[in-house]
Image 1 (cartoon, rainbow, N blue to C red):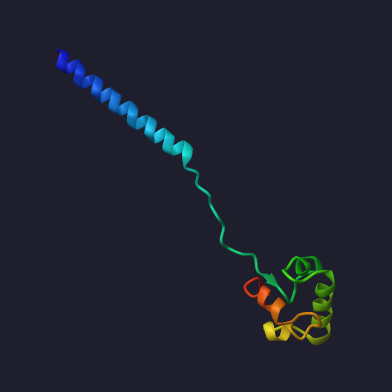
Image 2 (spheres, rainbow, N blue to C red; image 1 turned 30 degrees about the horizontal axis):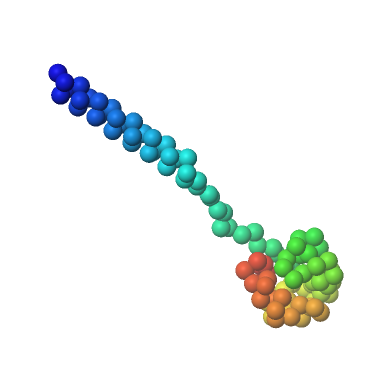
Length: 101
C-alpha cells in the first residue's frame, strides 16, 4: 500500500512539475507577428501627402514630382524619376522597393 501511495505521489508530483514548467514557458514566450508586406506608393498617382512621407522626399520634392508628371506624363522607372529636380541617385536608391510605377 505504501508503494502505491508513493507511486501515485510521484505521478502527481511529476504532473504538477510539468504543468508549472509549461506555464513558465507560456508566461515567458511572446509571439510577435510581423507583417512583411509593404505598402508601395504609386509614384504616378500618389497625392502630395503620400509622396512627402517617402524617405528623402518632403513637401517641396513631392510637389516637384507632381508638377513633373503633369507636364511630362507618367514615370516608367527610377531613371525617369531622377529627371525631377532634387531627385538624384541617392534619393532614388532610398525609394527603391517603396514605390511602383
